[in-house]
Length: 201
Image 1 (spheres, helix red, strand yellow):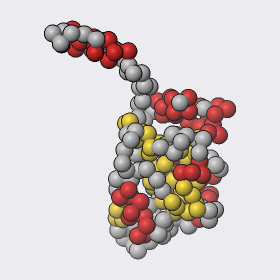
Image 2 (cartoon, rainbow, N blue to C red):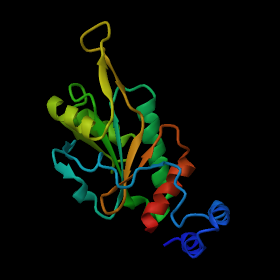
Image 3 (cartoon, rainbow, N blue to C red):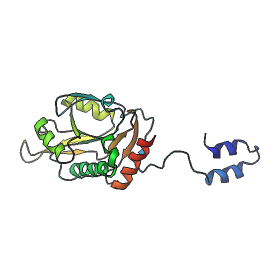
Image 4 (cartoon, one colour):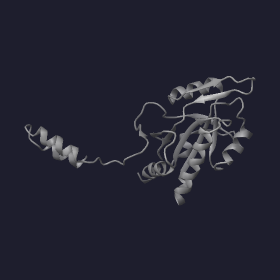
């Protein structure tokens, strides 16, 4: 239990103001995450998808690793490659613990993002990163489970469409529990520190 709370509980009922002052000067026991702490959330808790090698994947496959999962598509011009590049940089910043970070990329464009394309796409960032697939109906359910958004936006031709989608990443701890939501644009140093906190637990 937080020592500050113990101290406040020992105060008399007439010392409410003093208790408030004590709490104002106290810090919590947990780490100060940069990402949004969603520990215990009832969403984004699991997945069962096929990766670009044809292997079925669940969180259990990555026990002992911190998993960072992102929804995107290969023809994304900026957000997706930036996010994956930064995640690769985080892996480098972790040094010898880099192999304890698993990057996962759920494509919201399975029509164009074939396994061969995604294998090459992942290799641009880190060969250990995996692309995950779902058929259209399954993808809708996964997006709902993660409270994430994607929508096809028509282009001038049938194949020149683009995809609108949410730009944050979901971070799971080494036991496979959802812990953080990292907003797009979070500095590499901050994301690295959040992952270090999770690895140290």
